[in-house]
Image 1: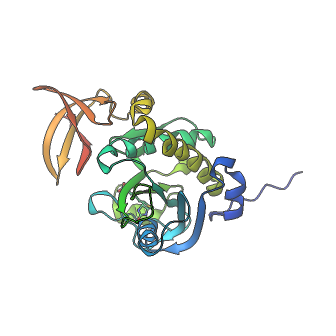
Image 2 (image 1 turned 90 degrees about the vertical axis):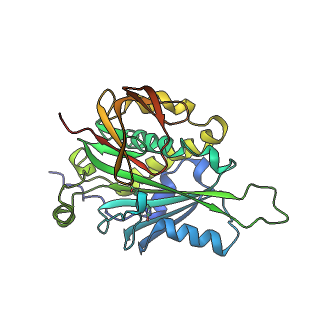
Image 3 (image 1 turned 90 degrees about the horizontal axis):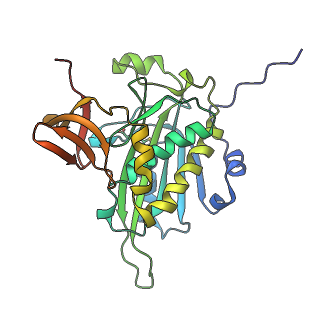
Length: 282
Ligand code: BTN
């Protein structure tokens, strides 16, 4: 009788990660930590302190004490029970062209999970949440960092920091604290192997970093709409907690704007500081 294989480690193994990445990613700088405040904040600080030496730097942490979320929220995660990581990337685009980037990253995460053997079921909620059974599985926080212009540098000074938090395992304490528990990947994929999943997510994100500067969101639009959690449903758009628009969700356009069919006709919404909710049943 064969001994059962041990459960995969909850912690990221940097050398295993490096070995799993395709050659195009071998030039990335990988920083894997057991614990930190926030991987987004770490990359901001890194960009402030020294001229970047790599085109892309990964900062991953098994545990964050001060994880940041969108719209000023916090992001909570327990040691090794979620994948929390950020990428700093020198984006050859003006900040004004970033609108669809977070949507393309969300799609890359879904496709990366599928490539890692995750059964279908993960959907996208505009602008950039991943949902599983209508509950949040992952979130993305994109921040920019303008470097002080260097006299001898021809490269654009805008860096983008793409921060990702993905729940791998259910945390009963967190579920109790939050009230409505978030989703976790282990309901689809038992004992999710953290390092292998991260390698697949990075591989999928690398395609976005490569394609987005040239083509924008347009090549991702169709695949995003196929995974739209709210397609055809009545939704509310909120700004600072206030209802600003209600309509039937009709996918996203080639710039990544939310399309709604409203009583006043078809309208589009930029991501900015807004969030989306399913409309309460009448
Ligand atoms: C959201 O509010 O949905 C976005 C959550 C983003 C959380 C991730 S975890 C890794 C990175 N570091 C942070 O402090 N935040 C992002």
